[in-house]
Image 1: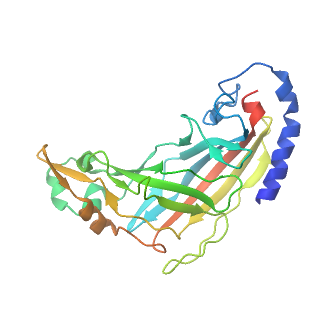
Image 2 (image 1 turned 90 degrees about the horizontal axis):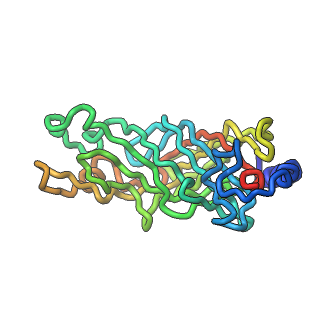
Image 3 (image 1 turned 180 degrees about the vertical axis):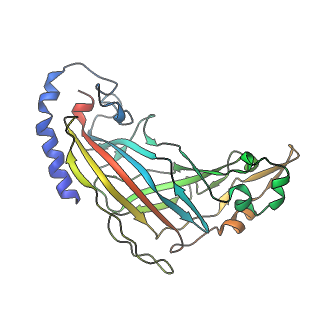
Length: 274
């Protein structure tokens, strides 16, 4: 469904929710009962010009950069609000949830250091990736492509606490689309899927979107930074070069890909904070 149709539905929500607006005159700093999932949307005391609250959950898909392809198995949620200036905003409960995804190959596959198997347990060899925001997202409801600047935190005790691909100053810039991509070679075009949109039968003033798919295979990925291997518990050695070599980083546009299958909800603001 395109943004024009969504805006018509969004206006309809306002009509449907007028009864809810006038049913309560209490000032609410927390979402109204039943609308707790929208807690990441700023309250009127935080941001005055919000028109809608959103929650979007990536349920499956994959994220490939360089030669590492990480399946998305644990749901990731983006939540916040949309202002009347078409800007996405969020409070301390919103933004992108820090969810660990297991990286195939573990820390040995990331670094190429086979001898680590002699020093680390099977559990300690596991590697996780956590996607974090690295800048201001676009509007996930009305923008196509939806701009999402991110950085990927690589988590394993052997790598230190600050091993990242991407940063706030040099992010991975995703341009997620529901349409068809036009990537540079060697990647080929891939297509997203527009979600099915319907009014929520249980929550007045809420639109459900289901079965959507965002895609992007035109982005570049920078090299790793902050990856430090500490030998014998006290000798720190930078292994950024090893991580980059083993992972094929930095990787230019046309060699990376993300597919994100999602469901979402859009709420008329006054029903969340009546």
